[in-house]
Image 1 (tube, rainbow, N blue to C red):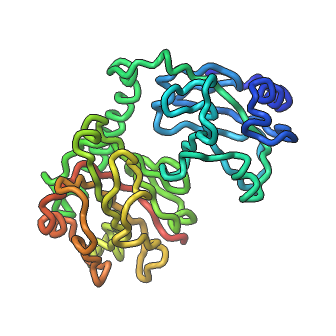
Image 2 (image 1 turned 120 degrees about the horizontal axis):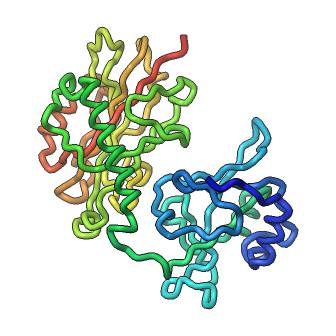
Image 3 (image 1 turned 90 degrees about the vertical axis):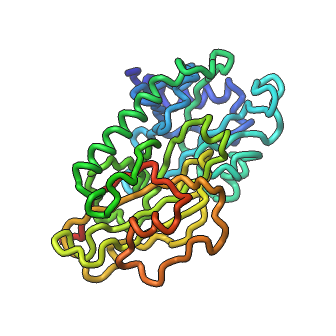
Amino acid sequence: MTKLKHKALTVSQELSAAGLIPDVLPDDFRSAYSVNATFGCNNFDSGAKVPPGEMDHPHPVYKLIEARHGSYYTFILVDPDSSPMQGSRSEPQEGQQQLHIAPPKYRTQFSVLDFIHMNKVKPVGATLFHVSWDDYRPSKSNSTNAQAREQDSLAYAESMVRKSNLLNELVLEGSVHFKVPVTLLINEEIVNAGDEVPAQVMDLAPVVQFHPGLEEVRKAKALYTVICADADFPSIHQPTDRSMLLMLATNIPGTSGDSRIGDPVVPYVSPLRLAGSTGIHRYFVLLLEQHGGALEEGAIDPPENRRAFSFHDFLKAHASLEAVSATFFLGRRKG
């Protein structure tokens, strides 16, 4: 793993030498903190050349070194050299910086300078790295490691879900086909199948990210539905209201693979806001592929009551939906 060698002042000098000051950052920018970029298990110094295959990693990490405790920060990743045809610095298209951490509709014509001005934020740290897409070959060999990680994650999730006995208890045995790797994020942290989530973050809606095969997405323009429910309401020992529906979103494009980009049929409600809940609970997340295409408004009616939601009855009523993955996490009230 490469150690971080560059001081903040050196980074500022590198940004100036690369023309990123003032092209991307303001003239008076001085880096007060160092930023560590990590792809997979590899850390990269500022100015490093990153192999194109590393950019396939679904969860790069950008860490602010020696950040002040209790302060909040925003990270932005842009490609200032992008152009629709060339992708090279020699012929950059004005305003074509690509934002990689926001929904797709905000990616084009993104300006860091405008963002700083409009949101009244102060840039305090930065890093840069280089990627030569001439070295990239879109073949199976380039994505072997990423695919292996996803398949390992999928196998682990299936194993944990089956061990939890949730498929049997929710009458879903034989109905869930573990085809699509799923990543669950809560408070921007990855939650693996079976992990317990601290009560203080359960007010935040879980983000379900999934990774269907690229060819499948291109050919079918696949859309997906995500359901999250409390399988143990009001308690794991007496789940008389199994399941308590927490969230249901439809028409999530496979190209985005993110539950935040879809139609919220049933908005998320925090289980901490539900009276009567006691002890530890299992929160079940189901991913469904919409084989019939986009679901029109009213195709799925929000239930009058979130209690006693039946996954089995839902799948029976909507035959065009195929359960292609699942995961779960644990949570409990404080005290």
